[in-house]
Length: 263
Image (cartoon, rainbow, N blue to C red):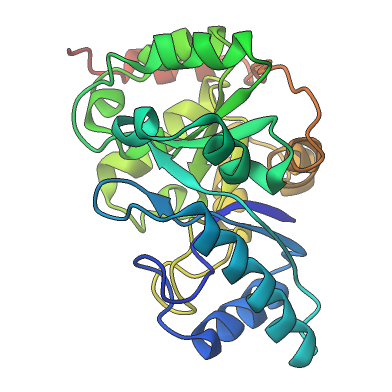
């Protein structure tokens, strides 16, 4: 599996504090079936991470992984908070893109409120040939109240990434309920761990994938596009169209009837 959203770099944000902590996370990731991890430290007002730090840390951690004989492939990236997006120049956005290809950016959805600037950001990126992956919108209160809000950014070409832990209830009942609705209605294109340590929010995706399969009444192997095929295309800087998955008969109606509309 390929994990496009992980706080694996040591001493940068609220992820692991030391290189040893990062190495332990890497061991957990390998044991959980993850072969590739994109290191996506926060880029926000709270964590105004310079892209130079990110690049240097990836190089240093890659060397530490090799020395420890941990065969985990790591890639550069960043998790850009939407209200910090305007602070970054073109070179910084390129450096923060997933695997440095300049093709995909990971944008962090806010916990509260709907980001009114999202549409213009996505349109501006599209003109430049850049796609966006929306990080964990199921944890956004506005999406929890009205999951259909996501049809607009998806219609503009954005991909939706759900935290595997949200599907298992790790982030609470509201994110779990919303994550399952997004799975049921085809509004999920990627699963990621959003891991922060080896124990608290660990780098695991299989339990979340199993929950997604239960929602769609299929086998986990039927959902490899969420953790293998689509992430591989993004890692390679390829174009991905956000085509919704067709849910089983009756599932869409039930998910829609469960929705609570709101602002």
